[in-house]
Length: 114
Image (cartoon, rainbow, N blue to C red; front, side, top):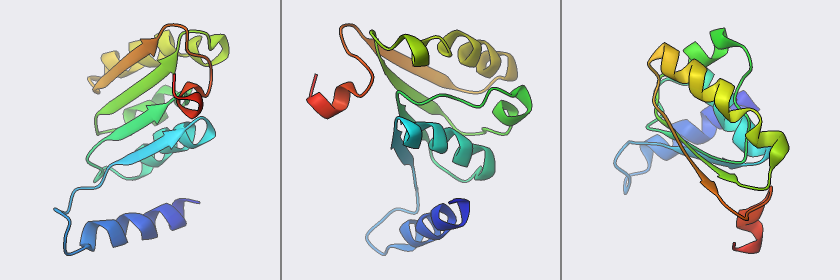
């Protein structure tokens, strides 16, 4: 998957109508994969994650050199249980991590338009 994302990144970065900045967005498993991709590609502009989980290993968190914006549903106990450790790790490493929790939203809340 990383090679596919690298190819998409290179293509998006070179689009004549673009500005050369590339961000990635992911939902659920895809959100977790965006965290993973950020450990690989420091040239991203930012990472936007919807209800995805960050790497558990602090060594991997340290590889994230771009801002992470995350969005979670208030009724998503499994994913939300990972937020404090992610926030603590990112803060300790000096990495930018900002998140919002949408009260009443469950896992996959963007799918239903909540």
